[in-house]
Length: 307
Image (cartoon, rainbow, N blue to C red):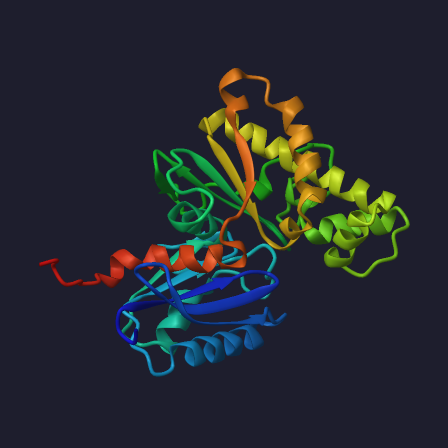
């Protein structure tokens, strides 16, 4: 275990998780922390988390998944939902924490899609979109059976597809993006504007599950915007499946039922109507496993030849 593993980290606006992962996808050690609000605390959290998870092990490579946009070639990240990091040299930081170990950087939505295609609800699927619905809305594409990064490494960023040009401002600087409707903070903000008095997205999900009218309306509004982004992507990319995870996906049918209903009216072309929408099979581990999978080619594992 100490040598035939990669160190993987999944960095999002809510949490940072890290683990040691084998070539078979088995997670040998895992830990997570809440994402700090300031740059110095973020850097310290990364040092402590990676150091504690890797203690006593010799990982062959490091796979990093970060909320985006990301710049894999430069090793820098500018996550929309982590304001403390703008053009932050993430690979340099990790290189200082784990000197001599090669690192690979991918967007968190791409990592989640890669993890699900490898070991989860997307296994064997030719064309799929993976979506993370949480503090932000991340996404990643698998086309022709292979993860598609795009020239910049940011393909599949569905959260910043415009759902309504006349919609609310988005944290990316645009207007009417899917994320401005369907992320946890966006749903909570809208619900409070309608008189809901709960604290956060978890409370909103719970109230929606109990039938609260405003909470249900917030999920319906968010699901409609998400459905518009999915329908556009499915039509352009000829998708077989969409897999959805992230904190808000834990609401279950509170999210999936209105999403499927809206998609029914938006997917008008015959080939697009074959699309299926399912939850992540790997749950909270999808991004971490996808980060690990992205590092496996760099790790160059050597296994005994069968007799």
